[in-house]
Image (cartoon, rainbow, N blue to C red; front, side, top):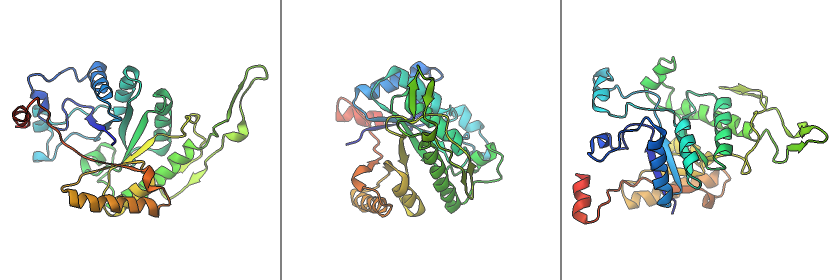
Length: 291
């Protein structure tokens, strides 16, 4: 079993009214808030804490953000890279994942960010690969609207090709560190990428040496059609939502089939279904908390 805590870099949990709970902490603009949560998950034997993200405030209601702001509905969205860095300094074992978009960021930036996070967290960094899908996010990045479904995935495929190519631009044994001769690294073991594609061009190489495991873990959260094909090609860990056990078994098999079609070993790809839990010392207390 893989235990994943799904978090948000904001004032509330996945339940948007949770900030109102009398016992709820309100220091969510401090590193200590997230460090406490990270330590709780680590002590509870969770494998991974993953932060979702959105690059805009909620503003669909009345085409305005003010109601969301006044009610504290997911309007705080800090950059999760800084959040997991803070948690990483306060923990030692738990995996640390963040959501980053292939639609609004550039491959070189993402490769450098996650390559650095992988080294600074000693192999605990994880990238939840998102394609982004609402007009408010597009407007924040100077676009008229978001890309079509198919085009988002075409771009994401090329994005991953560039990022993984950059991560592989250093050989494992490229660094020499011979102080006597003055040779820092073997230049023949650090290569340019020279990628030129439909959406991106990137010269490389990446100015971040490889981590011992080569790259961070890649997460995908797609269950059907083009998204499932993308997850089968790239994902090491796949998030899913199953409304029933029977449908879950069917979709689980379909995802594993996509992994095999991509020439990868299905046994090396983990699938984690969402599970919403209310815990109490008794059944009655748990039900009261849920209400």
